[in-house]
Length: 395
Ligand SMILES: Cc1ncc(COP(=O)(O)O)c(C=O)c1O
Image (cartoon, rainbow, N blue to C red; front, side, top):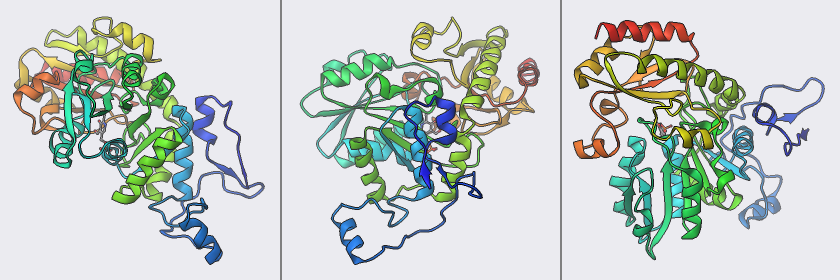
């Protein structure tokens, strides 16, 4: 069994071959699902070496598993990180990364434009653990003034869910470096196909692998990618708190990663066509898509992303009632949360990702009651536009 060299591979090659073992004639081509919770030691001497931290043998799947390792090596390669740990969900990745960086008494600076679940974790749970969170806008204005002796980490998401605001990755990483903060970014919306935050100085990238990486709406998973030092700390949290990925899930993730580049490229083309169509519709007040020249951060998007992504959102002129009618009238788009998969989806953020948030919090996050979030899949763009047209015209 030999491991492949991956140092010089481009993304599409890495996605397919990184982490895979070649078994020679008659060996399996697809990764095997090692469906075992535990692994045997050769003898007690090996057991002792493991207990002393001198053995990297697999011992128990919560600590590591050969199928999980294949997914981890692909993700480390795609994000240009030294290592990765896969987790049971995106939220397990986010909480493990945060707890790797923070302890009671520490302070965190975070953007307030975040996936609602992350925002609620920062708002409701971290303070209960003695961690104070300061929220700033995605442009990080005023962040520097909030940094004090107890500030340990900076957490951002870009583009943001659901209004596609951008954080300047280079500026954010530089700010963190200047103040010796651990920098963490949620790269779910862009995926490593479109941006690689570790290459501009971020310490950890977190993913909901449920989305573009898995890509088929059949897996809940996550990942933390970064330097070996930070990933070791995040893995420790996964081991302590139990948020490990299941080998069956890792197999689906591996399969998804192999086509992520192709899927994202096609989704970006379709999303731009859909965004242009929506921008021209009389009932739409505003379209949020970084690929449109009307997006306030279009130039930043051009600079830091290689394309503009599969996600967009739009605000209906007539507010919530009209937004509900559009969502109730679509026939091809599915009315479902989540994103990044082969099926195109619509949701109302105020009833899904951004539930349990006050009017003021929604306003600060840029979410209006009439905001519809769209995740573009792999259907023909003409069919998607025709579906939105009939839904909007009749709304
Ligand atoms: C940007 C972003 N990060 C994290 C998450 C959480 O991921 P998961 O649902 O896999 O726990 C989501 C879920 O929608 C998300 O959109």
